[in-house]
Image (tube, rainbow, N blue to C red):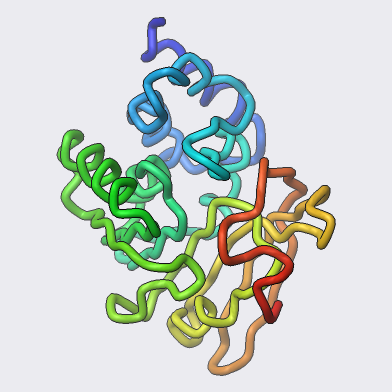
Length: 220
């Protein structure tokens, strides 16, 4: 596979035509080797228009949905970003090209190690991986300008919302119905101790991230 050509085709067909005009984001996705962030036996799926299975219960969002979600967060060059459930590090790598610092959060030590190796191998020095439960976030590194959860959620966002910077913080994710069949990418914004939300686009990710399913607790 000519991966450089595949990346260009991905951006031309899945990103640019879907209301993602940010040239920084387009360049990041056209440059970074998406295939390096998925299991070796699934690299042929890296550029197709579908979520790519990573490990049990986890997927890398299709390029269209991931790019639109990141674009909706309006990441600035000075922003501190928390990337919740970043898998093997692709979303953290993409956002490292847009933000000041990215903190990637995963629950499994081996996943954290693999993502760290991927980021280091590409010379990315403004993204760091940490280990911990996804819904708990990483308050020691915050507060954050932006929190990105690139997957489905149903409940249990209050801990992460509290880690947003007052008046400027925003969180983007895909809010799923209780049945898990329909989802809407949604942006949450913080103004002091008040929070607002707005739908961005429809999306149907392959699953709900651990800790955010319907039995997990409170929903904002």
